[in-house]
Amino acid sequence: MTKADLVKAMAELDEDLVVAGVKEQLASGVPAIDVLAALQQGMEQVGKLYEAGDYYLSELIMSADVFSTAAALLGEALTAGGGTAQLGTMVLGTVKDDIHDIGKNIVATIMNCNGFKVVDLGVDVPIANFVDAVKANHPQVVGMCCLLTTAFDVMKETVAAVKAADPSVTVLVGGGPVDANVSKYVGADGYCKNAQDAVEATRKAVS
Amino acid sequence: MKSTQELLKERTERVHKAIALEKTDRTPVIMMMDSFCARHMGVKLADFVSSLQASNKVMLDSAKDLGDFDGTNSAFAAGILFPLMFMTKVKLPGRELPDDTLWQLDERENITTDDYDTILNKGWAPFQIDYLKNRLGINLDKLFGELADTNQMVKNFEDAGYMVYSPLVTITVNEYLSGGRSMPRFIKDLYKIPDKVEAVLDVIQKETMDTLRQQIRATNSKMVFLAPSRGASEFFTPKLWERFVWKYIKGAADVIIEEGAVVNLHMDANWERDLDCFRSFPKGRAVFESDAATDIYKIKAALGDRMCIKGDVPATKLALGTPDEVYGYCTKLIKDMGAGFILTSGCSIPPNAKVENVKAMIAAGTGK
Image (cartoon, rainbow over all chains, first blue to last red; front, side, top):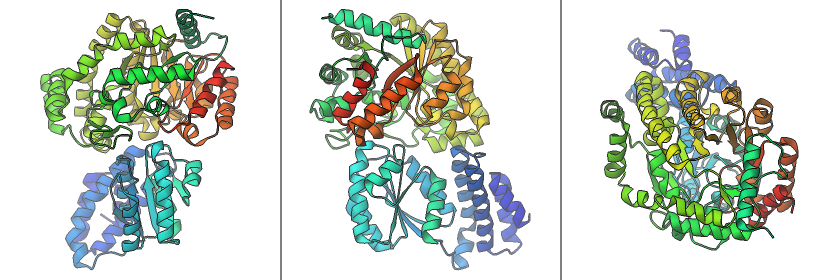
């Protein structure tokens, strides 16, 4: 299987073909980092198909699953080769008093698949934990999620605390009720309607 | 001054006229309210969800303070019943959450793919009861005991002059698995074992519809609330949506309509791609209830001549907006939607909605 075929198989979410292609490439001596790059190119195509309206959330979730399965095959080979550079770092969490995690987890997975390091703080995250994570990890981006309108005020406080800790960081917010007005209310730099938005916004932030 | 029974009759007729797409003296206002009522009345959410009856009392007190509107979606807060609908645990204020924090689904992989075989072999009801009791630890006797008071809780509202819009609630069967498996795992199942998932859904659908028919007949319900929200078009490709979502919405709605009731489709999230499918229901026998994620003007264009539209004052606007903004939004909707429209919030009014904003919404409908 050529690199282009692997990219295509990844973009088409053909798990059997992707797994076979990764094994074949590794067996023929292709460096693991190059195989990973092909998988990430496939993920970029998934993102484009999503933006074009040809793919939906169902395909984003499946693409993350196929990618994770394939990337697991690269595990040891990647480590032996010195790992791979990451495009940037995002600290991510659902704000305090909100325990919803489906959207956050999808964002974390899709960000990872697209080459970003994600420091996932989980759900119901106290303000201090966001601040500590920013100080410890020096991310370019902090992502905050909520599904409850009751979380808007604590999100606002969290944004202020994070900005006070590192004024250079870009804060992105998202979740069911979050829109541009909410983003403005909480003082964020922008809002993301979905995981693909988060990838694009983070690319801009780190460039 | 009209008696509460005269008000109830007038309001009920107004709502049913709107559902039948007939012109009404004013746009009906139905309140989808639960946790908001607790904050409104100064009651902690932990006390509010301590029983269905407790929530019924607080909601009624809140309604009386809010004044002249037509009815409430339900007679009590359904938070403690969520495990019966989503097959997952719910975290409650005063139990797993602080006293005044909103209840939330604790969604994780509780149903396994092995359970699919159990459902296929033994049927849905035996699995469901055992799963809820023994795996999720739900006290079903207590819940069913509280539900036995539903008629009295409905009557409490009716005695005060308010109709209870949809006492009978059901859910599309894909929601059971999406909640119990967790949505990401359910979606992966649709790719990896689609035939088995469909077979399981068919078993659940058959049993659920048999039960629903009996419930409609026993309660003589004129309205059934059907909630297929996790099946929104924005989440699935057309191929998956038609096979795993629409098939079951259509099946459930057809049963409800065959039994002589109106189906209230509670359509959170964005359904714009597939609005035309909903034209297949008989005229005036379905209501499309939107939370504003679907553009209500597109709903009007696609379905306005077939079904009543109910919506869609956004939760965010009720929480962060001003009374003037809410009033302006509502009066524009009333003017643009015309006949066949019921004014309500987009899904439930959030607990942090400003009381003056909720009153502005009501004022826009009643003209007072």
